[in-house]
Length: 132
Ligand SMILES: [Zn+2]
Image 1 (cartoon, rainbow, N blue to C red):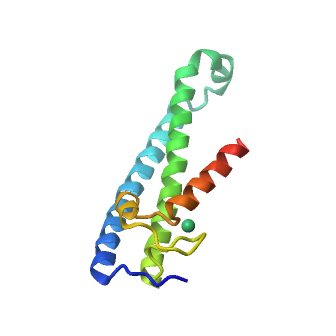
Image 2 (cartoon, rainbow, N blue to C red):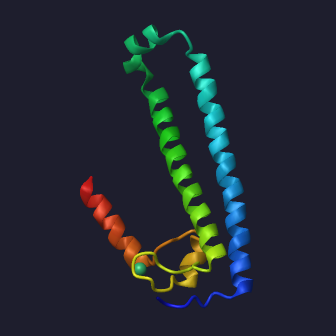
């Protein structure tokens, strides 16, 4: 396994970035949850009319779908951020989980919670796209 060359100063920077990212992501998740709770409350008890008029409510369900998608991607991001923080504390930060080579610093600056190098990530995304 490659030895990480990211020094303590850089790790500290990434840690701070990740902690900030975690705060922001948790805030977005809280906002979406609050929004969805409000949405459920507004339509409360009126489920029969909802199902009959579902076709007319295309915009609403589109919004809901987007919220669910955003919520899921935010939750995934939060997981990744937490994992990246763990990697910092375990001294494994910046190492690709697939091929164990070092992740380019330029990539980590854009995505500090990246757990794979760009090659492995591209490969994984190609696999994912094929499944669809
Ligand atoms: Zn890799």
